Amino acid sequence: MIPAFRRLPAAPGLTRRAFSAGVLTSALAASAAACGGSGGSGGKSAARSGQAPTAAAVRGGTATLVMSLEANGFDPALVNPTGITYGTRMAAVFDVLVYADQHTGEVRPQLAESLTSPDGGTTWVLKLRPGVLFSDGTTLDADAVRFNWARLADPGVRSPQFRAAKDLKLAVTDPVTLTVTLPAPNPHFASVVARSMAFVGSPKAISADPKAFAAAPVGAGPFVVASWLRGSQTTFDRNPHYWQSGRPFLDKLVVKTVADEQQQLSTVSTGGADLLLGSALPGAEVARDAAGVSVASTVLAGGYLIVFNTTRAPFDDVRARQAFAAALDSGELVKTVYGHGAAGTTGLFPADSPYADPAAVQPGPDRARAQTLLDELAAAGKPLAFSFTAVNSPVSRKIAEFVQSRLGTLKNVRMDVKGVDGPAYQSSVIVNRDFDASLYSISFTDPEPALSDLLRTGGPANLGGWTDAEADAAIDEARAASDPAVRKAAYGRVQKRVAEQVPVWTYLNACSYTAYRKNITGIEMFGDACLLPDRLGRAG
Image (cartoon, rainbow, N blue to C red; front, side, top):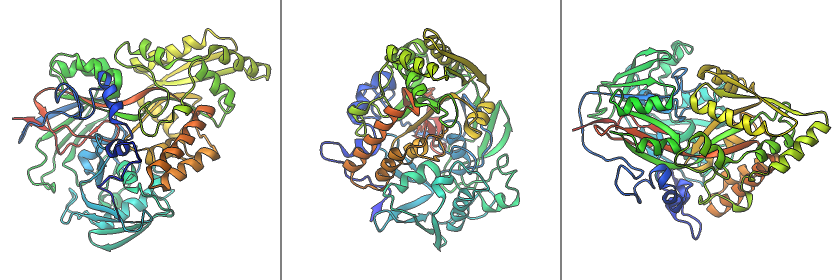
């Protein structure tokens, strides 16, 4: 039997903890200067390590969280469930079935009591806690989970989680037991649930008005939506029927939208808000120097990317993507844009990750090669001309300006910057895939399913539409493997194809962090820099 809540053994020479997390302990320690340490295994104090202090919380009060982007809604079938924009908001309303511990990578239970496989990963049994109610008084039972997961698999819903849920056979065994049969064995299905299928809404409320549910969600989480001023703030009130006695500690959670990262930090530092969430290594270091602010952080795989639309010109030609990558230095970009804390990167996995293949790293800058490729394209009647889509934020603008300036020193290339607001970015890049090149970010503790989502043909986060049979086969092999050595080798082949074909170019690895005032306690993170709101409270 494979238990979801216990890690698999690591390959020889690799720590069990490191393999589960996808980042070696030594990698975390080496990144301490940029992201605050290894989640408690090192560092000068609890506040400077990965974990926040755990002072007792008092009952009552309000906590105000500032975030850079507004949510488009609260329907778990229609959003990126554990992304930084949505994860905390969604967990406030819906809680989570299970979640991945950021420090260990271990999948932990919450609304579920267990998630196990009796046959090596083809069949999984989800056991729920009995007696959990949605805020409308209906029961969160196995049939409610079945309803929600079947909705994700409905092509008419157009859910980003469609691939995670499609082809699952769902059988309600008893009121608290759902048996799931996968189309192929996946010993890592618990990680799929934690990342893509952890939020469950009230079937009664969804059925009554599916379109209205995004603005009037009904979940079994610690809070309910009290008010939503789009583009400004969302106020969550305590759910009096929450299943955990004595929780949430807070009476209210307020989430404010503040686009500018410097303004976010200033707001927390001066007491205008209590905490902020971020996922950039330099941001954690800047926050660490701010007065009145502490930082809890964890290094993750993935990071900040430039993604290319491979389905249309000019980046349907691999030479255009290779020229772009050869023209740029990730370290120079980070130093120029952020000016603080972190170096660039050589790929989606930090150098000391157990999955990193040193023979398949992202190629370094080679401007002579870049010019040769650009000249080849021009000679073929395809001089490189494209638009670069970036959100209208100070950091995004700096990145776009940096790229434009470096490409501008070469011949036969022209780049136009297309600045858009958050909703327009969601529409043009995430939903409609109408872009040439764009900024994107993804982070993860375990490669499954994140790497498949990003790189496999048809993956929900494969924004550029990249298709590569070799990468697909390697991703599938890694998914089916329970032997960590087999997974490592398969992910090495994926990295080799990414280095050769350049569907994405990574310039900065990820760091999930919270900057908070010292009167806040109970900080526990999951997903891409998301908080578990039932833990949050004001320190006594």
